[in-house]
Image (cartoon, rainbow, N blue to C red; front, side, top):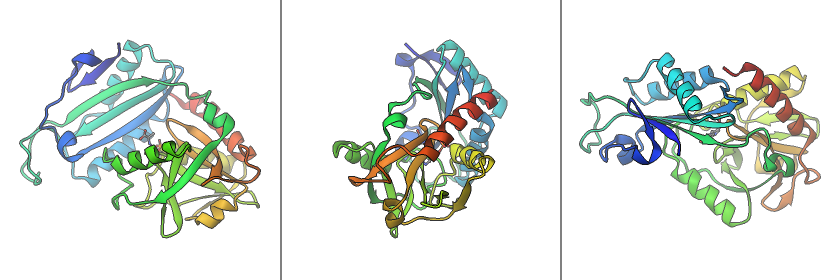
Length: 284
Ligand code: PDD
């Protein structure tokens, strides 16, 4: 059984409890991060903590934890659970108080929950066979750049995609792709240009995205940060997604139609293996 961390205490997962008044539970008033673990080490921990701080600031969440304390908890959980490869999930809520939309006078301790998930990241069948995706309208709220736990729409659309026999959903606004259910979205054009939506309030500012775009530039691949249309996606040579839990995963079909030759693309596969080596080297 896993050991988890809840509000200052390490305990077996079946003994962990949170208040029914926790605002994360009642209002989705919480932010989170998911950090990959490779060989027992955290991938890009500082970048994840920078984004956590940004999410908190955007939501006026003033009470948090020191980064060094959060690092200690991550490391303790990795050790206690003997995690070699997988994820650490962190959720920080505004805290527990009687239900009230207004939090202006709230002065309670934030809620903090962390747990590990063992998962094979380097070896992933989806990377080898490529993902089938379907498209759906992006009906999420307008601040997808904030990593809140309000994930219902993404969860609903991913479930529908799975029920249709696909692996994931990519979301569209005004005929252009925003991002995947829990990953950033890219195409590779016939001129070998990598196109991905520019950072804005429309998408999560992916930590893997930043790392992969750097690697692409090192490989002297041209990267263009702009929105791409559904037609451009269908006409692309390759497509792929990035996230902390999936790394780089090629996309081979969209709404049942092949992308390129319907096989994982060369550029996506090369970026995936470079990312795996680079992230292992930089893990702490
Ligand atoms: N999701 N876009 C969305 C909507 C996401 O939820 C995620 C991450 C990403 C990729 O961000 P990063 O590269 O920092 O993981 C993009 C995580 C993995 C999750 O919710 O499990």
